[in-house]
Length: 128
Image 1: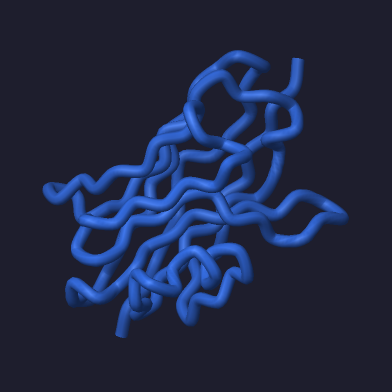
Image 2 (image 1 turned 90 degrees about the horizontal axis):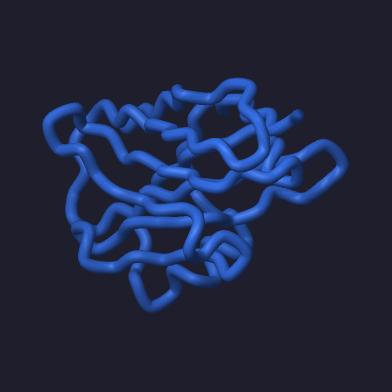
């Protein structure tokens, strides 16, 4: 059974960078997708980025393209989200999620947050 655990959140200033990690336990086949999402108070869960198809498919939401980068650390068995030039509107609880997803439908599954396994979330607060 796949389990996920996020870490790396905290309080930062506007313009700072932060790196979140999603520790993955359990074996994942190449048809698994690992995605990052966030949820701000009073808002719907928002898709951010995803690795799928054994890492051959990368998805980014338009809202964070150019600022956030998703990557895999095979040594640590984590999927990381590097966030640069953070803004107060990036304040949210950040979640990683996993599921077996056909790359053909990945965008839709990301936009609707239809993943079966979720971590507990990590808080990111951007404030001056």
